[in-house]
Image 1 (spheres, rainbow, N blue to C red):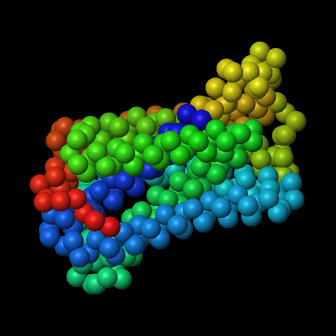
Image 2 (cartoon, one colour):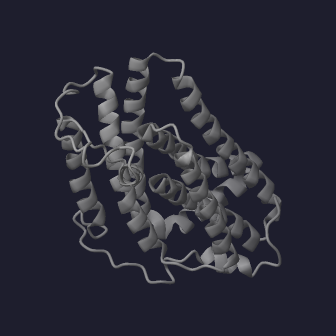
Image 3 (cartoon, helix red, strand yellow):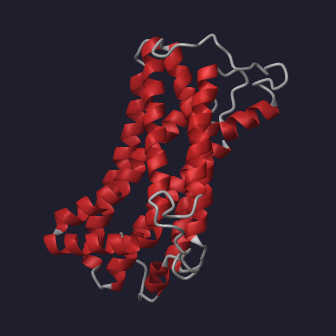
Amino acid sequence: MFSNYLIGLREGLEASLVVCILIAYLVKTGRRDALKPVWAGIGVAVALALGFGCALEFGSQELTFEAQEALGGSLSILAVCLVTWMVFWMRRTARHLKAELHGKLDAALAMGTGALVLTAFLAVGREGLETALFVWASVHAAGDGSPRPLIGVALGLATAVLLGWLFYRGALRINLARFFTWTGALLVVVAAGVLAYGVHDLQEADWLPGLTSLAFDVSGTVPPDSWYGTLLKGVFNFQPDPTVLQVTVWLLYLVPTLALFLAPVGFASGKGKVKEPDEQGSRPSEAAEASKAPQAPQA
Protein backbone atom coordinates (compact mmCIF):
# COMPACT_ATOMS: atom_id res chain seq x y z
CA MET A 1 0.00 0.00 0.00
CA PHE A 2 2.85 2.41 0.80
CA SER A 3 4.48 1.93 -2.60
CA ASN A 4 1.18 2.69 -4.33
CA TYR A 5 0.66 5.72 -2.07
CA LEU A 6 4.10 6.93 -3.13
CA ILE A 7 3.23 6.46 -6.81
CA GLY A 8 0.00 8.43 -6.42
CA LEU A 9 1.73 11.17 -4.41
CA ARG A 10 4.71 11.58 -6.70
CA GLU A 11 2.86 11.46 -10.03
CA GLY A 12 -0.13 13.39 -8.69
CA LEU A 13 2.06 16.16 -7.29
CA GLU A 14 3.79 16.62 -10.63
CA ALA A 15 0.42 17.02 -12.32
CA SER A 16 -0.80 19.33 -9.52
CA LEU A 17 2.24 21.57 -9.90
CA VAL A 18 1.70 21.77 -13.64
CA VAL A 19 -1.93 22.81 -13.09
CA CYS A 20 -0.88 25.36 -10.44
CA ILE A 21 1.68 26.93 -12.77
CA LEU A 22 -0.77 27.17 -15.67
CA ILE A 23 -3.63 28.60 -13.61
CA ALA A 24 -1.48 31.02 -11.60
CA TYR A 25 0.12 32.39 -14.76
CA LEU A 26 -3.24 33.04 -16.40
CA VAL A 27 -4.55 34.75 -13.25
CA LYS A 28 -1.44 36.90 -12.88
CA THR A 29 -1.50 38.02 -16.52
CA GLY A 30 -5.22 38.83 -16.40
CA ARG A 31 -6.25 36.11 -18.85
CA ARG A 32 -9.07 34.56 -16.83
CA ASP A 33 -10.98 34.10 -20.08
CA ALA A 34 -8.50 31.32 -20.92
CA LEU A 35 -9.19 29.34 -17.74
CA LYS A 36 -12.12 27.35 -19.13
CA PRO A 37 -10.18 25.95 -22.12
CA VAL A 38 -7.30 25.01 -19.80
CA TRP A 39 -9.64 23.23 -17.37
CA ALA A 40 -11.27 21.50 -20.35
CA GLY A 41 -7.89 20.16 -21.48
CA ILE A 42 -7.11 19.00 -17.95
CA GLY A 43 -10.49 17.25 -17.71
CA VAL A 44 -9.94 15.42 -21.01
CA ALA A 45 -6.48 14.32 -19.85
CA VAL A 46 -7.85 12.93 -16.58
CA ALA A 47 -10.66 11.12 -18.42
CA LEU A 48 -8.16 9.61 -20.86
CA ALA A 49 -5.96 8.34 -18.02
CA LEU A 50 -8.96 6.75 -16.27
CA GLY A 51 -10.12 5.18 -19.52
CA PHE A 52 -6.65 3.83 -20.21
CA GLY A 53 -6.50 2.27 -16.74
CA CYS A 54 -9.92 0.66 -17.19
CA ALA A 55 -8.95 -0.68 -20.60
CA LEU A 56 -5.83 -2.29 -19.13
CA GLU A 57 -7.74 -3.85 -16.24
CA PHE A 58 -10.86 -5.13 -17.97
CA GLY A 59 -9.32 -5.83 -21.37
CA SER A 60 -6.69 -8.16 -19.92
CA GLN A 61 -9.36 -10.28 -18.18
CA GLU A 62 -10.55 -11.63 -21.54
CA LEU A 63 -7.15 -13.14 -22.38
CA THR A 64 -5.77 -16.60 -21.68
CA PHE A 65 -3.45 -17.09 -18.70
CA GLU A 66 -0.33 -17.10 -20.88
CA ALA A 67 -1.49 -14.01 -22.74
CA GLN A 68 -2.30 -12.23 -19.46
CA GLU A 69 1.16 -12.99 -18.10
CA ALA A 70 2.82 -11.88 -21.34
CA LEU A 71 0.82 -8.64 -21.38
CA GLY A 72 1.42 -8.00 -17.69
CA GLY A 73 5.14 -8.63 -17.98
CA SER A 74 5.54 -6.49 -21.10
CA LEU A 75 3.58 -3.56 -19.67
CA SER A 76 5.43 -3.82 -16.35
CA ILE A 77 8.75 -3.45 -18.16
CA LEU A 78 7.35 -0.56 -20.21
CA ALA A 79 6.09 1.11 -17.02
CA VAL A 80 9.53 0.80 -15.41
CA CYS A 81 11.15 2.37 -18.48
CA LEU A 82 8.70 5.30 -18.43
CA VAL A 83 9.01 5.89 -14.70
CA THR A 84 12.81 5.71 -14.84
CA TRP A 85 12.86 8.28 -17.63
CA MET A 86 10.37 10.43 -15.70
CA VAL A 87 12.32 10.58 -12.44
CA PHE A 88 15.55 11.50 -14.22
CA TRP A 89 13.77 14.07 -16.38
CA MET A 90 12.05 15.68 -13.41
CA ARG A 91 15.25 15.86 -11.40
CA ARG A 92 17.03 17.72 -14.19
CA THR A 93 14.19 20.01 -15.28
CA ALA A 94 12.17 20.68 -12.10
CA ARG A 95 13.87 24.02 -11.56
CA HIS A 96 13.06 25.11 -15.14
CA LEU A 97 9.53 23.70 -15.29
CA LYS A 98 7.82 27.03 -14.62
CA ALA A 99 9.62 28.89 -17.41
CA GLU A 100 9.05 26.03 -19.85
CA LEU A 101 5.31 25.91 -19.19
CA HIS A 102 5.00 29.70 -19.36
CA GLY A 103 6.61 29.68 -22.79
CA LYS A 104 4.23 27.00 -24.07
CA LEU A 105 1.25 28.82 -22.60
CA ASP A 106 2.24 32.12 -24.21
CA ALA A 107 2.43 30.40 -27.59
CA ALA A 108 -0.94 28.72 -27.03
CA LEU A 109 -2.59 32.02 -26.02
CA ALA A 110 -1.45 33.52 -29.30
CA MET A 111 -2.87 30.60 -31.29
CA GLY A 112 -6.35 30.43 -29.74
CA THR A 113 -8.70 28.25 -27.69
CA GLY A 114 -7.85 24.94 -29.35
CA ALA A 115 -4.16 25.41 -28.63
CA LEU A 116 -4.91 26.15 -24.98
CA VAL A 117 -6.92 22.94 -24.63
CA LEU A 118 -4.15 20.96 -26.32
CA THR A 119 -1.42 22.51 -24.15
CA ALA A 120 -3.23 21.69 -20.91
CA PHE A 121 -4.10 18.22 -22.20
CA LEU A 122 -0.50 17.38 -23.13
CA ALA A 123 0.93 18.84 -19.91
CA VAL A 124 -1.33 16.74 -17.68
CA GLY A 125 -2.06 13.82 -19.99
CA ARG A 126 1.49 12.46 -19.99
CA GLU A 127 1.51 12.31 -16.21
CA GLY A 128 -1.92 10.66 -16.20
CA LEU A 129 -1.00 7.93 -18.67
CA GLU A 130 2.28 7.19 -16.88
CA THR A 131 0.44 7.01 -13.57
CA ALA A 132 -2.27 4.69 -14.94
CA LEU A 133 0.28 2.32 -16.47
CA PHE A 134 2.60 2.19 -13.44
CA VAL A 135 -0.29 1.81 -10.99
CA TRP A 136 -1.74 -1.03 -13.06
CA ALA A 137 1.65 -2.74 -13.19
CA SER A 138 2.18 -2.28 -9.45
CA VAL A 139 -1.29 -3.60 -8.58
CA HIS A 140 -0.76 -6.51 -10.97
CA ALA A 141 2.55 -7.27 -9.23
CA ALA A 142 0.87 -7.23 -5.80
CA GLY A 143 -1.65 -9.77 -7.05
CA ASP A 144 -3.36 -10.32 -3.68
CA GLY A 145 -6.80 -9.27 -4.87
CA SER A 146 -7.23 -6.77 -2.02
CA PRO A 147 -8.27 -3.14 -2.56
CA ARG A 148 -5.30 -1.84 -0.55
CA PRO A 149 -3.14 -0.91 -3.59
CA LEU A 150 -5.96 1.16 -5.09
CA ILE A 151 -6.68 2.75 -1.71
CA GLY A 152 -3.02 3.66 -1.44
CA VAL A 153 -3.05 5.27 -4.90
CA ALA A 154 -6.26 7.19 -4.10
CA LEU A 155 -4.79 8.50 -0.84
CA GLY A 156 -1.60 9.51 -2.63
CA LEU A 157 -3.51 11.39 -5.32
CA ALA A 158 -5.70 13.09 -2.70
CA THR A 159 -2.59 14.20 -0.80
CA ALA A 160 -1.08 15.52 -4.03
CA VAL A 161 -4.20 17.55 -4.82
CA LEU A 162 -4.18 19.01 -1.30
CA LEU A 163 -0.48 19.89 -1.54
CA GLY A 164 -1.04 21.46 -4.95
CA TRP A 165 -3.83 23.62 -3.57
CA LEU A 166 -1.65 24.67 -0.62
CA PHE A 167 1.18 25.56 -2.99
CA TYR A 168 -1.17 27.67 -5.06
CA ARG A 169 -2.50 29.51 -2.04
CA GLY A 170 1.05 30.13 -0.79
CA ALA A 171 0.37 28.24 2.46
CA LEU A 172 3.08 25.60 1.92
CA ARG A 173 6.72 25.95 0.96
CA ILE A 174 9.12 23.02 0.60
CA ASN A 175 12.33 22.39 -1.28
CA LEU A 176 10.88 20.70 -4.37
CA ALA A 177 14.29 19.68 -5.72
CA ARG A 178 14.99 17.62 -2.61
CA PHE A 179 11.44 16.29 -2.49
CA PHE A 180 11.61 14.96 -6.05
CA THR A 181 15.11 13.58 -5.46
CA TRP A 182 14.16 11.44 -2.45
CA THR A 183 10.75 10.36 -3.75
CA GLY A 184 12.41 9.57 -7.07
CA ALA A 185 14.94 7.35 -5.31
CA LEU A 186 12.13 5.49 -3.55
CA LEU A 187 10.31 5.09 -6.87
CA VAL A 188 13.44 3.53 -8.37
CA VAL A 189 13.33 0.91 -5.59
CA VAL A 190 9.62 0.30 -6.27
CA ALA A 191 10.30 0.11 -10.01
CA ALA A 192 12.98 -2.53 -9.41
CA GLY A 193 10.37 -4.72 -7.72
CA VAL A 194 7.88 -4.16 -10.55
CA LEU A 195 10.59 -5.07 -13.06
CA ALA A 196 11.34 -8.31 -11.22
CA TYR A 197 7.65 -9.23 -11.25
CA GLY A 198 7.47 -8.35 -14.93
CA VAL A 199 10.30 -10.78 -15.63
CA HIS A 200 8.50 -13.47 -13.59
CA ASP A 201 5.33 -12.91 -15.63
CA LEU A 202 7.27 -13.37 -18.86
CA GLN A 203 8.78 -16.55 -17.44
CA GLU A 204 5.30 -17.87 -16.66
CA ALA A 205 4.25 -17.01 -20.22
CA ASP A 206 7.25 -19.05 -21.50
CA TRP A 207 8.76 -15.94 -23.06
CA LEU A 208 11.81 -16.18 -20.79
CA PRO A 209 13.54 -19.31 -19.38
CA GLY A 210 14.42 -20.23 -15.81
CA LEU A 211 11.01 -20.36 -14.10
CA THR A 212 12.04 -23.31 -11.94
CA SER A 213 15.56 -22.03 -11.15
CA LEU A 214 15.05 -20.32 -7.78
CA ALA A 215 17.71 -18.02 -6.36
CA PHE A 216 16.47 -18.73 -2.83
CA ASP A 217 13.28 -19.63 -0.99
CA VAL A 218 12.59 -18.01 2.40
CA SER A 219 8.85 -18.69 2.40
CA GLY A 220 9.23 -20.54 5.69
CA THR A 221 11.01 -17.60 7.31
CA VAL A 222 8.97 -14.84 5.63
CA PRO A 223 5.50 -16.28 4.94
CA PRO A 224 3.75 -14.24 2.23
CA ASP A 225 0.56 -14.06 4.32
CA SER A 226 2.33 -12.80 7.47
CA TRP A 227 2.14 -9.14 8.45
CA TYR A 228 5.83 -8.58 7.76
CA GLY A 229 5.66 -10.53 4.51
CA THR A 230 2.72 -8.36 3.44
CA LEU A 231 4.62 -5.23 4.52
CA LEU A 232 7.74 -6.18 2.55
CA LYS A 233 5.66 -7.02 -0.50
CA GLY A 234 3.65 -3.80 -0.26
CA VAL A 235 6.67 -1.54 0.18
CA PHE A 236 9.41 -3.27 -1.85
CA ASN A 237 7.44 -5.81 -3.95
CA PHE A 238 9.46 -8.47 -2.12
CA GLN A 239 9.01 -12.07 -3.25
CA PRO A 240 10.22 -14.87 -0.91
CA ASP A 241 11.02 -17.28 -3.75
CA PRO A 242 12.38 -15.34 -6.74
CA THR A 243 14.08 -16.96 -9.70
CA VAL A 244 17.74 -16.45 -10.50
CA LEU A 245 16.80 -14.28 -13.50
CA GLN A 246 14.55 -12.09 -11.34
CA VAL A 247 17.29 -11.41 -8.80
CA THR A 248 19.83 -10.77 -11.56
CA VAL A 249 17.60 -8.28 -13.35
CA TRP A 250 16.66 -6.60 -10.04
CA LEU A 251 20.31 -6.04 -9.14
CA LEU A 252 21.35 -4.97 -12.65
CA TYR A 253 18.59 -2.34 -12.65
CA LEU A 254 18.59 -1.11 -9.06
CA VAL A 255 22.29 -0.65 -8.29
CA PRO A 256 23.44 1.39 -11.33
CA THR A 257 20.15 3.28 -11.69
CA LEU A 258 20.05 4.35 -8.05
CA ALA A 259 23.75 5.27 -8.07
CA LEU A 260 23.33 7.37 -11.20
CA PHE A 261 20.15 9.01 -9.93
CA LEU A 262 21.72 10.03 -6.60
CA ALA A 263 24.90 11.32 -8.27
CA PRO A 264 25.24 15.12 -8.60
CA VAL A 265 23.08 16.58 -11.36
CA GLY A 266 25.08 16.72 -14.58
CA PHE A 267 27.48 13.97 -13.50
CA ALA A 268 26.42 11.57 -16.26
CA SER A 269 26.95 14.19 -18.97
CA GLY A 270 30.41 15.11 -17.67
CA LYS A 271 29.38 18.62 -16.64
CA GLY A 272 30.32 18.14 -13.02
CA LYS A 273 28.26 19.02 -10.03
CA VAL A 274 25.59 21.62 -10.51
CA LYS A 275 24.85 23.84 -7.56
CA GLU A 276 21.64 22.98 -5.81
CA PRO A 277 19.01 25.68 -6.24
CA ASP A 278 18.45 27.88 -3.27
CA GLU A 279 15.32 27.54 -1.22
CA GLN A 280 13.59 30.34 -3.06
CA GLY A 281 14.53 28.98 -6.47
CA SER A 282 13.08 25.57 -5.74
CA ARG A 283 9.81 26.84 -4.41
CA PRO A 284 6.77 27.26 -6.61
CA SER A 285 6.97 31.05 -6.79
CA GLU A 286 3.82 31.00 -8.85
CA ALA A 287 1.96 30.25 -5.62
CA ALA A 288 3.11 33.51 -4.09
CA GLU A 289 2.35 35.35 -7.29
CA ALA A 290 -1.11 33.84 -7.51
CA SER A 291 -1.85 34.78 -3.92
CA LYS A 292 -1.62 38.44 -5.01
CA ALA A 293 -4.46 37.96 -7.45
CA PRO A 294 -7.83 39.39 -6.39
CA GLN A 295 -9.48 35.98 -6.28
CA ALA A 296 -8.89 32.31 -7.00
CA PRO A 297 -9.50 31.13 -10.57
CA GLN A 298 -12.91 29.79 -11.34
CA ALA A 299 -13.47 26.71 -13.43
